[in-house]
Picture 1: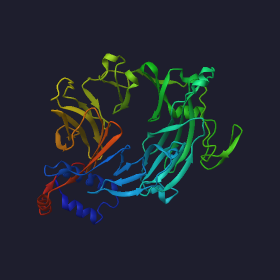
Picture 2: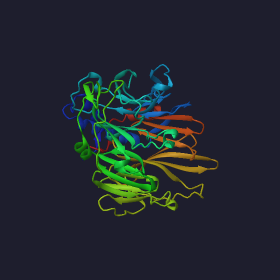
Picture 3: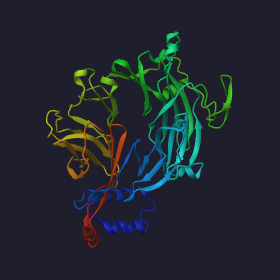
Picture 4: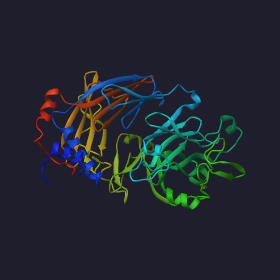
Length: 460
């Protein structure tokens, strides 16, 4: 396709040329944004920095502080507070959170469902849905009483099915000494989102899955059970739900369950445990990995493990899920299905060696982003590189001005025209650095005066 004029594309969009095909308009916009991001004149400027004694979280242009009590928009050259809620008691501490976004084309029961919201899990087993813009409580669901403590939120299918996991159930020392046995290790509650609807709750029982279970997860319709000694077992979660579901329940409806009468999702009863696994489900897949390190993804499906020996710590094997065949150990399979070959070595005894610390795929712009760190004297210096996902060519390099200590925990987000770096230092010290895409005045004028310039259509 011939190169297309940027100004004409924007003018066509304003006149409604893409009104009947939002997908075409979105691809055109992302193609233009990718061109602007990667052009040589574009810079990313550190527009503001902040520090905190509590964890900092980032979700789609919003930065959360003070256990999600304060929300700041990152889409501004200066911090703009979206909302700041009053301090709450420790019993209302938020343990985990997920951002919910409305899927296109769905008819939803409430106008608030069409706007972004934040689902949070409190220390007292309450699941709250908050407005992402105001922090107002939109929905409130009570999960369970003292039988378990829910602590973690995750996606089974992103923006469709949510999983809430309890911490591991452990008997008090006195009960253990008295010889009391406890077979339930974890509890899982599963919800369809927007609107929130209860699918079911189940317990992971050592009588079914064995005494060696150490952790559990649900992802992409697969129940993942992790055992001591590095064993990872996979089961079909949908088949388990269909086979062992005793009864379905709707939030807000009355129920009579095991002699208890109450309302589903209301205090004090919460949710019924309506998926009872009575025998071991068929095993889909089994693999052994050091410290249960296991990731699955790519197309066709591949998984990444570390050989289950201490001497192999830091070594990763990429294998085909179909037949467990080992792929070249110097490659990685990305979410886009791209096989990325690593052309570097991590050498701990060479402080001048540049190392890759974070590798991610930016799906909207079809870019591979890599955070590379070089140790210069006592300080590390990092830069964020964008590579063409098709050919691996370096398109853009963005220096991060702050020093990078490899012993600290780091997160780096690239979100369209924003780069955000969150750093966790010892003694609960957190820092957030926000970079914004900018051009100098001269460059902006040059761009505005050259409307006839040709920009390749990258994604159309």
